[in-house]
Length: 275
Image (cartoon, rainbow, N blue to C red; front, side):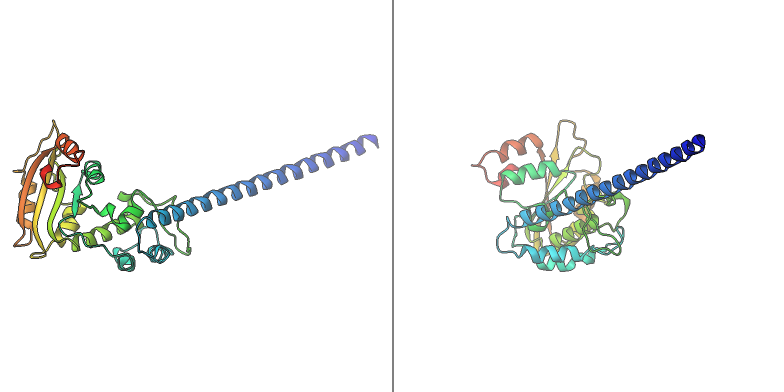
């Protein structure tokens, strides 16, 4: 009798132990789900906060309306199926200001060009415009069946041609190119074999938007280093010149990076004197 009672008590103890272990596991899963949900929610809130803070630095715009148009482009869409035209309403909501003779394009010279425009306010890149500035260096995407913005699990640039980020930059770059007028400048990299690469955004999208007589001149600033392998006679630059709309004048300047830094730091020198 005592032996049978002992076995029953042992079974009850084991059962209670299993129940307590199961409850602990369930509690752990619930806690992890809550923490993950809070973390993801915070990231989404951080993205929205950063968007609005950057937007509000530009006066005269309705940032909430711009945010709504922005989200409309990619929410409830497959992460690799956001067409560039989905951003058309956003471009309409936040049009570019007049930048004739001040527009600066670039390819493979991002750091150099933004160091320059950061010191010399006479030129503006697409990243200096409202939309470019607000979304520069940010990552976002949507998901089928969801009205939320995600900042994790989004495809990288090279993973799909129609990601939310890639389609945005292609669309805003096309709009920036459409807006080009007067004397237009581009900074290209003289340290690579093909400074005017046919696969770059500048070659494949922006320069194709330059039309005469709206655009009068294209000034190519070829940034050279000590190890530069390219000059203004480069074959790809000849292709750039030949492909320009008839009536657009072409000029190329070989400018050392050190000279750009020195010139941009001198408040007395006008921008044009830097090349």
